[in-house]
Image (cartoon, rainbow, N blue to C red; front, side, top):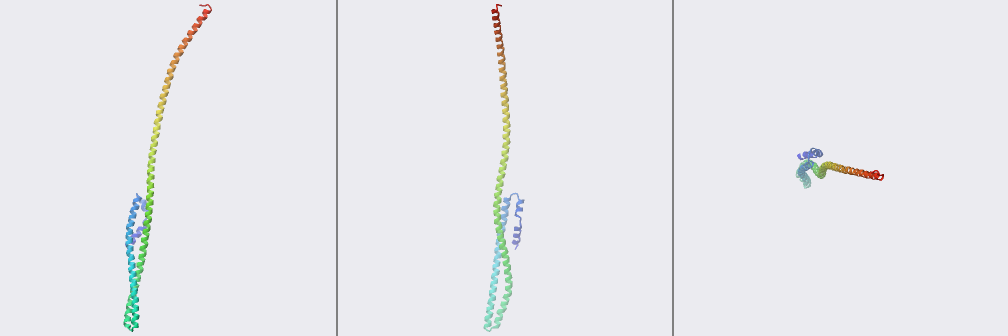
Length: 228
């Protein structure tokens, strides 16, 4: 009955604690289920053997009970025939079989109890394996979600880096724009300087023209006054 002790150890194991200790829950679940399925095969074989013992014990008990009934009938027939000695032999055999029957009944009751326990263990283990298979699929699905989320987070980190690159690009663009504005301003200042030179020359010659006009007008005034 070592399998029963092993089975109790299996069912006492803390599945969640095992998962907490492992780095890869998916692999741990698969391994744990493989172990349970191997134990399930052993439990099933042991259960079948004990159930066979139960049937054998019942058959022996029933056969012995039938022999007891048969000896009783033979004893009655012997008494009816006036053969008391023969009747006594049948009754002695009946007593012997009756004593054996008590042992066989106890053996059968023990076999029934063991068979019941093994069937309960078999059904419990089968149910737990089915439950763990469902949990395995659920945990695997959660792991897929976690892996996807991890990839998204990694991509998000990459996007953040791209954002910093864009910011640097914008800073460089602003610097170039500033350089261009300064160059335009310098060109504008140079143009203003050239324009100022032309205006100065224009004013110079305009002043000369005005002096010439004044001289002409003065000469005309003197002529008019007869002062020439």
